[in-house]
Length: 462
Ligand code: ARG
Image (cartoon, rainbow, N blue to C red; front, side, top):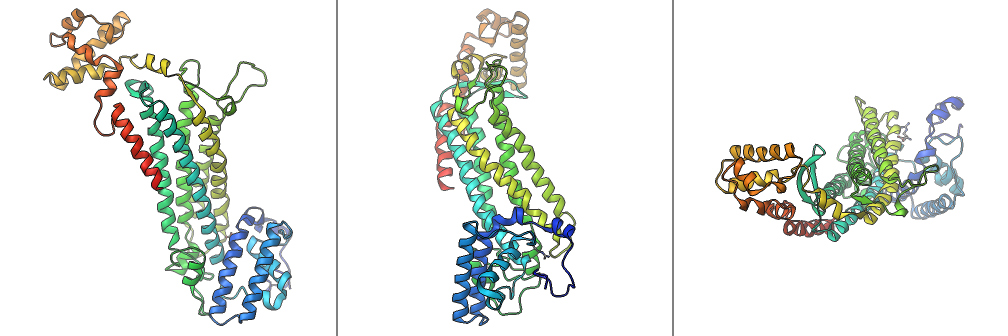
């Protein structure tokens, strides 16, 4: 009697080296409440199948409630000899109920279907938390967009001056990917909801007449696994969530990089709130964007978690293999990381002070209105190829003299091309430029106001 879940065919206990390698209680203990919920549901189907009497079921449920209490109070903890949370909790139940009744719960289930089910329950709960936190960041971005709805900034491609855009448009461009990430979490959840593995046993299902659908319903699933091998051996649900979490990390890192640039003296677009920035131990003047830097760094970490998980799954034969014990830490770490990062990042974005005068002043720099000149010519009937050439000639003329497009005189324009009449000046303001981009999805203030309402409608549904 080794005290193990699997002691019967072994003459002696495992070596300490094996125990040290095998042990997972230091990271799977967080599954304990879900293990106990699964056990309560399992006790009920054992009763339903006639394998527990009414009294036994009542006793079993009482024992599980007591164990739950002990775990929550920290009175019951993992022992050195416990291999994983599932084995430990069975030990705890037997301690409370004795081996006669406590020993009946394991019938018809395996740690393979237990762990797959509990893992799904845990991930569903925490994915929901991360989704809410991501929406808080969306709210922070939407709030800033609303405050600065008409403010104009330099829009960039290749980080080079491109065309003026509204700051609100730019901020909302960071919000939409997060909205899609939350939609991805919802899609993922709907897939997980129809796949409760309990009842799959070790791989082949159960011979004891247990009802997997009853357990599934009890645990908040819509359905049980259609295939017991798939139920115990597949981990695409972990990889898919790890991807969405990595994507959130990457999406946040793109905002982070811009905040880091915007907060530099050279850009001067934004100032961080004191509560969301840090100082230097030696340079008294410093105000550092640590939250954004950590966001950038943690994106690497969550990408690594996804990559590691995929490597664990690659070429793994069916059904359950112990390799799968490596599935938990990466995604737990990604969830933990985002649960700490997102609130800090949302606070940073909500409290950022934008220097809209400076942004507006730089918006026309770098000939960002050259496209407007070309499109004005198109509206005058000039073919775009030619219009592009003419606007390019305007830029060349300015560059030689160190001036901007609006500094060209009427005569300068006429000398470049007679079709460039004084009326072209109408489009040589950043306000005119943004207002003219008024198709759906464009940066015109009227469109961005609509877009903000659309975004809020979408987040309201999530
Ligand atoms: N702790 C394991 C895991 O996390 C579950 C135990 C399955 N072990 C086994 N020998 N079948 O995947």
